[in-house]
Length: 556
Ligand code: AMP
Image (cartoon, rainbow, N blue to C red; front, side):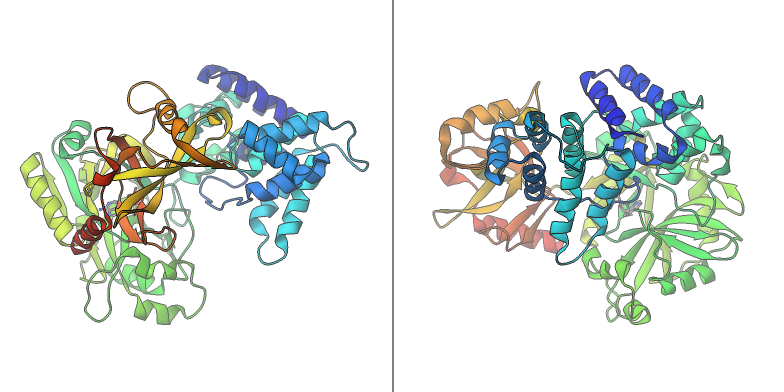
């Protein structure tokens, strides 16, 4: 199929914000796509070149994109860069420059979807030295064959910034409507495959029924939404709720199809070969001819048997050699919390009470090999708080709260699972630099470099861009921009240095040591909470305070 057709659909999708209209545009388009292109076009509509479960990134930099645009459009690198500063979005830059270009390249040919897909996919696959030029060449080739509209979407896709407003729900509904299928059925198969490209092909060929939950085939796992506090968890999940310790390991879904045991991560990677120790444990201590159980694999120190943070064992996941050795050095304990399939039966639609009771019958508990997650089923807030404290004392990340009457539903959803994490005391920091946004936000300062105090000097501790709102109540980008704009001292590309005057309160998940920032510390997942306009910059947090919080966090 010609890429031009897809570019036209992107344009139509961009023109409307109405969900139903988007669904109708997309469903009409899907009907017309030949089978050979269908899977790839679904990915491209989702703004990616891999299925959802495959978290590989395209990883092509803005700089390389500028190079490709410059060669394809016959403009200097500087010209492209300066236009980027004006427009704030390389897709729009490519569109404008290719529009002005009078002639197509001598050897240009018609752009087809297959070539776009394959060239972009190669960006993620080519590795090692000397590949940068090759990669730039692949994109230059696509742009050379593009008209200006096509160029805009090629660039946006390459930069993983498509933004035509197509959510997973719209893709699901469009497939259902295009191929006259039930939305729930499409969603279910979408959950089992985590690949709407594959689902579309199955729907077109009337083969949806061939996909069933079966051991050996990974499926999307159930995830948790954050809960602000215990009260909110009860509000959403009802009473009683099942609370569990939230362990700091990694997700492992364990399958036994009657013959073989296989292990999958949350990203659906098969890690069976990396964990022969786990396979042995499961063979010995889980009852049932066939099953799928959901677990957290937690590392522990083989000498003193104490749990270790995830970082210590993460290397086992990708390891290809010395596997037995690694298993001895970095053993893991399986903490089982769910059973989704047992002796030929899919249990997803059974409630948690049923599943947990079954789990308690089929796991033979062996400390530091396989255990069940510690649970508390209660309607009493006080008891939960005690349980939370106990979890933190034992170095857990916090608690999981689970709807006791809820089914097992892949993905994150309201009334399913929630996570309660400890919020460390927020920091007051000052903004020293800010960055202009992209696209619609090109005239707004949307992210901020923040600093703490160190003996009268400001020292960086991170960059924050979440917590600010687009519009409505709360702190908006517009408000931040109006405060920072008059304080600009220097500009360089998209970065501006500002007079350190604006104090904000930030929350974060953790403080880490870091050589990226001049304070020597970094905030993990910082989020702006509010402006502290009453506060003087001299009263912001200092490095001693940060060290103190870091120590507290370690003792947890
Ligand atoms: P998060 O990654 O913060 O969204 O939290 C969800 C993750 O917590 C899951 O994917 C699991 O890997 C992990 N986890 C730890 N303890 C539990 C538990 N008791 N139940 C479910 N998930 C858990």
